[in-house]
Amino acid sequence: MIEPINISTEELEDQRIIYIRFRGSYVEFRKHSRNLFKELFDFATKNHLIVPEKTKVLTIYDDNPFITDEKNLRTSVTMTIPKEAKVIESGNICESSISGKFGVGHFEISATQYGEAWQYMYQEWLFKDKAKPRDAVPFEIYITEPPKNLKDKSLTDIYIPIL
Image (cartoon, rainbow, N blue to C red; front, top):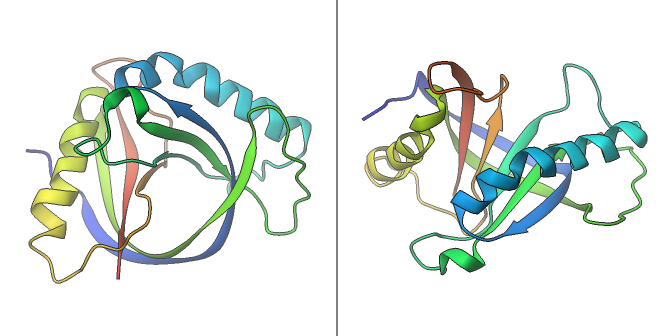
């Protein structure tokens, strides 16, 4: 099983985000994700929401795949935006915020290792650590662009909501 480079704790306070939500299996999500991210980036660019070196891109997993039927899984492509930014939701673009304490696994992973990384965070870390899960959505932040092939690796942080 893959292991993280390290695990840290992070507190987020009203981190504003814009997002597009997809409903369907993770396989279907992966098929559509490139177009969803393009739509999100086009909106952010047009509305001057991207701040170089500060804007973060993430995927939020709104549902538990062990509870929710795969055709109803909600997954959101997301981008952080500045606190002072003016946003008018339109089309598929919505606005929200993320807050709270998170356990953060810092991984260097290939395209085929995302599932293993998530499994590590829940099975090896969360339930064996003193941290207690919190009722909020987990997500991954892409520190470097996700790999486009099976050989390359990228840096990805997995955020697990904790008390």
